[in-house]
Image (cartoon, rainbow, N blue to C red):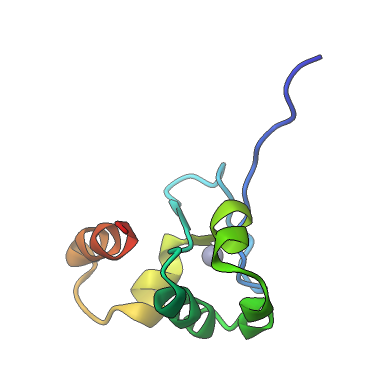
Length: 89
Ligand SMILES: [Zn+2]
């Protein structure tokens, strides 16, 4: 039996990006209990706040387009650096 494809989708309802979309990077939620709430708020998924940070970290992803549009106002060239910074726990 071949392994099941492990495709991950962005958790933003209006977003159809997934791990196979070219040019898109999916990020895990931070396990930090304050920051994961900020992420949920920024991506409009406060309905997921009832889940534990561990569960979100394991099962949900957020793609890079939301970081550019909603979390950071800086130039695009700086965004990757900032994302990496915020993702490191
Ligand atoms: Zn997305």
